Image (cartoon, rainbow, N blue to C red; front, side, top):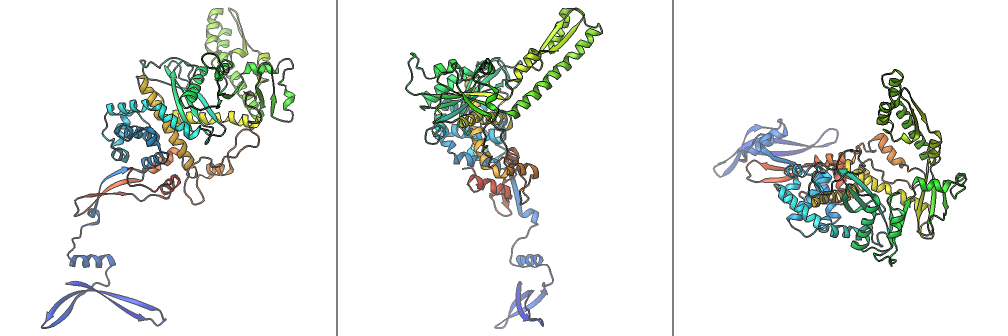
Length: 586
């Protein structure tokens, strides 16, 4: 028996040409010397899939229920690690890390994992088995000792890795301005036996915690190039001296312009910047851009000094000179928006301090607190909670507590609101006033990198490692992950809330503004095609839904790897990187 399909064409009364197909079950046999056909059933009225099932059965095929025809033996998240690995390969990161081998695969896996799913090393090694990264890089099942060995291997190659990044982004050809940005931050440690652990000024607000300091060097656009880890009580000037030595001696860069925050590039550091160890002048001259502290600005304003309010009647930027800074240009700026914000914040903090003191005053007046000593102790506990003690005068007796504002001191501080003064030896022919301001304000990129490293993306803190080299390796991994993140954020800007084309302000002193397109993204949250915009972390989570599945078909002994059908956003994410969606990472 077999199924015969007969097609017949006819023309309807309307003139339309139609095709009619009959599906018949027939038995074919020989009658003498002739072949005859016997129709056993007409299947034309059955649904097409039912007729096809009968036909397949008569052909000897074995039919199984649809749910049993295909078995997905395993489904593993793939898209997020594949995208980050693709960007790493495009940037040449594997070759930058070192020669091929297991140590490099583990180090690369640690960097990619820090971007995709930052966690402790133990959690990371367990997570590798749950994503395609572990199997494709051959790191699934790696022991803690394997991971620590890879970290030690990576730390031993730090200078070479950073020198490669410096050639890419700080050398004269890619960086004609010969400019580098540097800033210092800190993070706390868990534990008490790390040689780098010390008590210092915590930029995380973690009082009473041991910490480390680490300085980040970037190019003018904020691409991380190098990182150095210091003991937790290291000051900004000492860190600046160390990074200049790295740039000059390790990277071999000459005639650089170093941009650092106030308090980092001090007069003492400037004096030593271009001197050799024997006190002679260096042949390569390093420039700098930094800002003056408040006492120096106040001195410039005092006694009819060069910095006067009248300079800013028609402008918000003026170049001045001072005998206190010979051979240097001083670019004075006044930002009215910043001035108003600082005045508002100061008043809020003063009122908050008075609110804390009010209950103590009430206790003294109610005779529940007496004695100059006890009253002073209680007032001292709260007077500097908001760092405003210098603005109050306390009159304490055995039976009274009076709090008054030091209005003259408040007014003196308010006179500096919105003012900042930059100093640099770079001549105006090479860098005009607005360009100096722009270069200094580009330190915001380093601050952004610190946010990504510490909290937004990479979760560097707290640090759990005990050995000094492991701490340095951990911070290096986070820096390399930040380098990857920098390029991913830029590439994926069309899919995220990132401003693709931030406007260049005509006035560098004015506050930065987002482009209208970026504001529209934040307002509507969907593109014109109806696709949602993502946060960077949200896009990685969405990419994780692109899985690689091990598919087994009934009657076959092997499982075939197949990707789930990608969404339009997932396709676009890989297109923006410039690669097709890979089935495997290698």
